[in-house]
Length: 418
Ligand code: AMP
Image 1 (cartoon, rainbow, N blue to C red):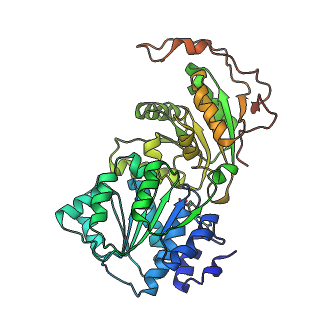
Image 2 (image 1 turned 90 degrees about the vertical axis):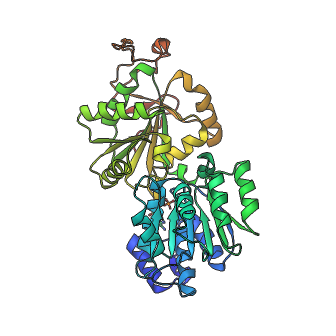
């Protein structure tokens, strides 16, 4: 199928061309016709599946159909959990809607109010983080009386982050008659409840949760805790990669690891919660355009990172849950490309490893990095840097042989994103 199927206005087709899209992704094929009909939609899809354009394109078309143009009032409100995601969505609207002359604005915390207020007043589409939007509504500087389409993107994340009270406040300011689109990567009970409250006879569109994972090669690298940083460096040397996103458990570990890799001459940046908006943006822009080949991030900070060139996701620290694992590895293998997800695992991670394999319904190859000395003894750091001495006695992975990573459990090599 091509985008011609949807008979978009030629100005929107120009936006699609500007983005370089030629065929719709599965979520787009399913969602676009429903949104165009004006139906409420419950979309179950992860980021990386093309879900932004799945709602942005038909929304732009409907705005054109209803003669919306030029400056305000706000007709479409998109709510997103993080600044990064809000900006990415707004940029997508911006590019896709450029020829159509439909203005959009992003509203998020951590920056000054006035430029946002001015931009939002002139926009037909506002993409907002709930906290800042509530602040604008309370100040009475933005009205939502003309909103006829509401999108809740990454709704599960918004609820995880405690935005439910803000969402309720915002929805109480919207006209009752409107189209509602709710997108979520997961469907826990609270999302079901939210969907029941706001959606009227929704079309349910779902792309398989494992879809992005299918084009991502996965491998586990068993290692003792004290050897993780060394193994990571060896791994980075042994795999051919473009951009690499590395996950750590804490902000502190993200910063320290980025510093260590930087000292090894690798162009590395990091992203964590207490950075200023400018610092975050600099890090993200540098990573997106390739100035930094490596980004080290925590789960919260990495939400919504949209960078097509990520060839590898490396879990320096294993995620807490299988769901977080799926989210993390969905950062690579985006938009039909292949990617690799490599996870350093210690003996303490056996429960989450079991859960991940249960969700994937298969075993993940366990690999070693050839030439890496897994027998290095634990060395106490001055000041007691290493967490757990006993971890150094962990079972040693099988002996390395050649230059690249070797699977232990299966013969398939998993380190390379082809
Ligand atoms: P999203 O899931 O909306 O974050 O999109 C993930 C990535 O896929 C973004 O970089 C989009 O620009 C890209 N994308 C979205 N739709 C398409 C398409 N039809 N063809 C190629 N890439 C796409």
